[in-house]
Structures are given as structure tokens and as C-alpha cells.
Image 1 (cartoon, rainbow, N blue to C red):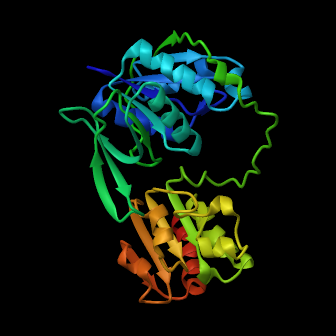
Image 2 (cartoon, one colour):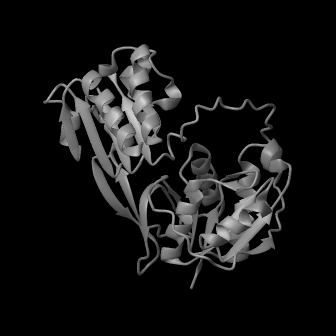
Length: 320
């Protein structure tokens, strides 16, 4: 069976959930070979093996932390040359998509971004994408070179599938461009205690109907009761009610959680483009004609200031 390279997104050896999802998808089309780079790379082996990695290629060097993107592209290019994989899978983050695009250019291959599903085909992996502001679903296949595919978080369930996980050192020769853009400083993001928006299994979002920054407290209360991330529509962000880093939509972040709860959001196409691939969608809006109701699995016509606190109380009661 052909091998499939999986780029490992980790922080000092702690593997992030989207990578484990990629291992699930990689097993559908071949044998997963993980590529872990930077500080703590070798520490990722145990969890990667637990989730199906037959091999873990590691390389630790200061360049991965000190410089942007290119050292990682150099390493993946070296891994492609060493393995000759059937495909390369990368998490669909901002950095991941830049790495994938640069790699595809280097190895003269086609690229697919923001896939939401992946299956084996007779002529190579076939990816499912949501395109044109989530108005259409397409199936796509790369016809030139080794497919490079970025996959949205929450596109597959994390499944344990113990494998050998043999650790092998990857030989990497950094290119002259690797040290072109230096990182001069880092500022840790203030922790809210909530999941990362793009990776969360549940997202609770508020829109224009929240009617003020102070009222986002009821959105946050529901999110906290569910262990969810908090999102916001463009209207709420433009009004200054919530940070842009939490905006869901075509000009914000794209999310694909198991459950998406939209409160006081009308459902403009700009917002729908960022959340339409969510597995289950619930909307709360007092306007029964709001476009969001055309999209949802469950809709509640009512004032969010009445409905959301009751929902929060019910969740707490059932969990308590």
C-alpha cells in the first residue's frame, strides 16, 4: 500500500487535534507517515503511532522556530523525495495552506485546499470541497504530480488505530531562502479557557441581534456550558462588540464543527460561507423569515435573550 505523508501540527511535542484527524483520512488512501518538525518532534511519536502512523519522520532544528514557513517547506520536500508518497496532507490553517502551496510549487504538483472529506479513487485520492461561498459541493482530484491537500479541522473523527510508529531521522538541507524572514518576537495569546475557534467541536456565535458588547456574556455563558468556542458575525465584529479573531465568515474564519449555534444572526452569504459545512446547525432568531433558517437543521423562532439563557440553564441541569 502506498504511503501518505501527514504534516504534524504540534506545540513542543503536543500534537493538535487536526493532525489526528488527518491520520484517520490518510488511512483511507494508504499508510500514514507523519512528518514532525522542530522542538519536541520526537515526543510526538507515541500519540501519532496510537492513531495510525506507521512511521514518524522527525527533524529538530532552530530554523523551524526562528524563521517563517520556508524551513518547513524544505523539510516536506525532503520527505516527499525520501518517501514518494501517494499524497501529502496538511491541516488547513493559514500557515498550513501557505506551506502546502509552496510545496506544490516546488514539486510541480496540483493542490487542493480546504477539503472536508477524502476517499480513495481509482486514479488517486478524491477530495470533497465546499466552494463558491459554500453554495456548491465538489469532488476534486489532482491530475499532476503528488497531490498536496489541506483539510479543514473537524472533517473526520479522531480514531485510534495503533501502528508501529517507527521513528526515523529525516535528512533536511535548508535552502538559501529558509532564513529569508526571521521571527523577531512572539506574544502569547491570552487564554480564554475555550477551544480554538477553527478546531472546536462546538461553536456558539452571536450576531447583530445580540445588540451590544455587554450582551455577548450570554453567548459566552452558553458556550462555556457546552465546552464550546465563541464566534461572531461580521456585523457584530464591525460594531466593535467582539474581536475580529472570533469572526466567522468569508472575511473571517472558516469553521466546520459538529454543532454550530447561531444566535441573532440573519444568515447573510458572507457568514454562511464560513460555517455552512458544520455537521449540525441550530439557529435562534426572532425573525421567522431570516435566511439562516433555510440552512439549519433546527430553528428556534424567538428572542435570543429569552431562549439562550433557558438553553444554558437546561444544559447545566442535564450536565449537573
